[in-house]
Image (cartoon, rainbow, N blue to C red; front, side, top):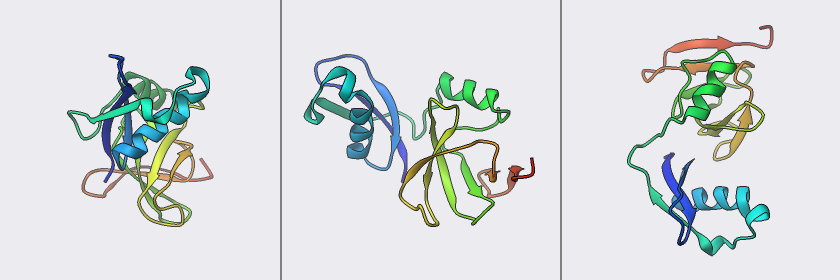
Amino acid sequence: MIRAYEVGLRGQDHWTTVHAATAGKAKYSFWMDVRDCLEVKYIDVVSRVADSLFVQTDEFQRTAKYRGVPFARIGMKVMFVSDDSEGIIVDKNSSANFEVYFTSGQHAGLTLGVHPNWMIRYLDDAGNVIKEFTDNE
């Protein structure tokens, strides 16, 4: 199950939210993002469970609005038109795409960057399609 973790560096009072399957995966993701510029060791990274299962960020909302899907939320289920694999939106990336944790299909268990407007269905909590993009749009 994907959930929100607060991740930071030991002795610092600055936390970053990372959505991951485990605290260890959240720590690793954070460490991969900062290790070159901060020259920190993995053991310097600490994590704790966030208060909410999914944490919406202003940065994510700006990306969703920019990409024309202002209804998109971290934690929202998506399905891919090409192979019906499913995933959960866990973040955005620097390319203004969404990071999706795949729960089924050929990429199950991986988090990959996905274009928000190409070959994707956005689903509500009941599994109903809210919006669908195909390669023709």
